[in-house]
Image 1 (spheres, rainbow, N blue to C red):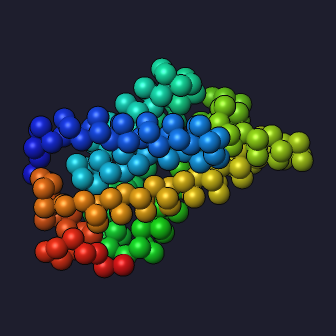
Image 2: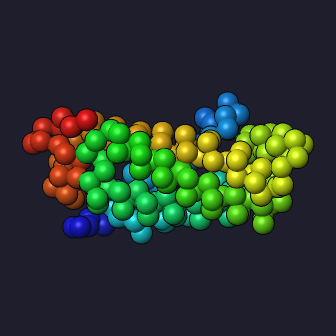
Length: 200
C-alpha cells in the first residue's frame, strides 16, 4: 500500500476522535455495547493493520486516563479487531453487505473471548461497563463468573462489532475513495465501480 505521511498523521487522530465520540454517546445512553472501534476499523482498512492497532491502543489509553482506567487492558480487543478488519477487507468480504455482517460477527465472537479473559482475570468479571448488570444477573442465577461474563459479553460484543463493521463499510462507500492514497485497492476490495456505487 502506498503511504502518505501527512494523510496518516491526519487519519490516526481522526480515528481516535471517531472512537471517542461514538463511545461517549454509548456511555451517555448507558448502552450495553461499545462502538469505540469504528475509527480503529476504518484506519485498519484504509491504512493497514498496524495503524489500526495504534489507533486502538491510543484510544483506550486516552479513555483510560479520562473516563475509566478499566478501558486500558481492553485495548487488546481493539488490536485484535483491527487485525481481523484488515484480514476480511483483504479477502474481499466488504464487497457484500452480508459478508460485512458475517465478518463483524466473527470479530465479535473472538473479541468476546478476549474481553472475557481480560474482564475475569483483571477485574473479577466486572469492569464498570453497562454490560456488568447482565453478568451480575447470571452469577445470581448460579453461573460461574467466567461463563457468566462470556454469556453476557457474547451477544453484545457481536452486535457491537457487526454495527462497527457495517458503519465503516458505509463510510467507505459514501466517502470519495479516489482521494485516499490506496484508492485503487479500496475500490477493488469494496467492489466499487469508477463511481462510488457499491455492490450489495
